[in-house]
Length: 99
Length: 271
Image (cartoon, rainbow over all chains, first blue to last red; front, side, top):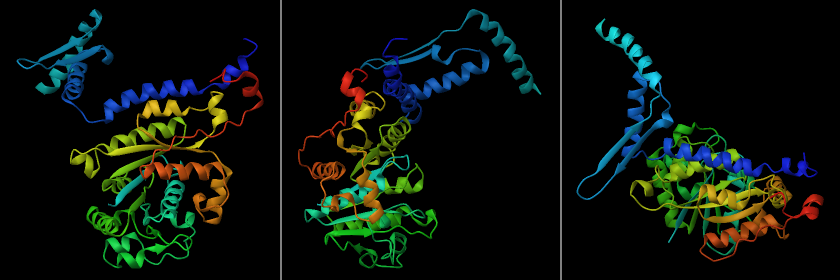
């Protein structure tokens, strides 16, 4: 610990600023006006999560609008070992719908 | 042309009522007709801060429901002729306020006053939404503290979506009033700086009110700090904020830094 370590420990404002910036970036998306991409992202997340265990941060939904044609790009990164888990998770669901 | 302004914050205890009273008194001192309106049904306090708690006969809900006429319910300030108060009901349920009732009362106030300052209840419930609904612009009151800044961000989102102006696709002007600011603690890095808060909330700055003993004294005696003759910093900051509100260009004076022993030694090292 440096000689002025006690001064550094007083300086909590930068921590506050950073925590707020990260938190509000998330809350503005979650609570703000929902655009098409946000709605699609949420519904895709719910659908995929029903069948495959994956990290929500690994889903990217991008929409490029142009005059002639727009494209919707969906990219999901799934660890290879989770695909098998996914198949077993479909099981109970299928049984439930059959019953 | 009359202006309806909502003073709001989300979080409680940051200074909405104090700011409504102080800005209202400051605006009225220059001869403009001002009405401060308490929207906090069941927990009214603007009457107390204005020193008019024993003069409330009729309130907002009486007028909204047609039990009293607006002029009967308006309380004229004894110190400033052009300053009036419309108190909230202390005994009624919060649901007694209806959208139609509020719209009608605000409409009537517009006809009689240059400025209508609506003191919002805290929270994001019905009362807070009604207080902002018919406003032309908003003053967002915040303290340099994480929970207050987060709630202010939420309120800004509501101002941009739940007000009549927002629903019509019009711009809702919002300005930040940063209260309880402590320059020394901010410069030593213990407290969010003015720039930090402005950068996070990204709305223009109306004013910075320093943490001050004058404020408590003002509410103790029921006289808004801007009515006081003494030249305290909080009073000056409110007076300047009121001038900015009425369109004057007044540079924001950052309150003097009362330097502590360490900041004097090391300057802004920790900031």
